[in-house]
Image (cartoon, rainbow, N blue to C red; front, side, top):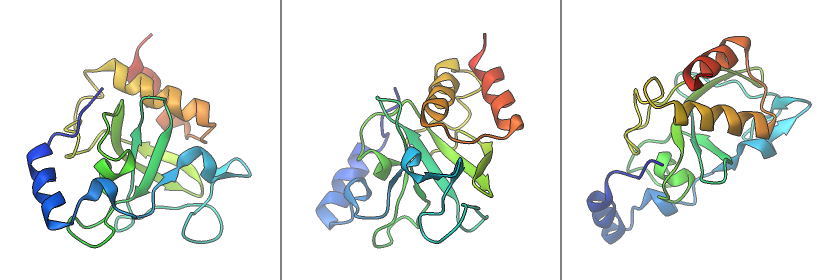
Amino acid sequence: MYDYHDTEIRAERLAAGRDHCSTPGPVHDLAKLLSRERIADPEGSGDLTTTATRRLIYAVGRDLKIHVGFDGERGAMHAVKHETLFHNDPVQAAGEMRVIAGVVVEINDRSGSYGTTGLMRVDRRMALAVLTALKLSKVPLSDGVLDYLNAQAGP
């Protein structure tokens, strides 16, 4: 499990009324976004496609559910950051995913909030948690993502 690393800064944010952990910003259960075996765009119609300016962040909770949201500008009203996805609870994994036409085509472990960047290569439990959560949710994955996660999770 990975803990949100910045509890002192969170206390300052709480005092200032800018706590991202409890923001009403849009957070989604990834499994509930599935439609026709694709990830539906929660902010529009059709299948989800992310862009460089519309990055999808994810976190895997204790129960292997995946919550996602569009990465917001820290400090902005209703900004979604990794700690928002499970309200500062410890997570099994966190990072970013790129989606094209409703299919996950790239996934990583980049999260400053949880300090997980680079850990998927050395902590097989993280890759296994991501892979298991995606499979349980029946999220469509490209062959490249499936191969990558299987390799990182090990035998």
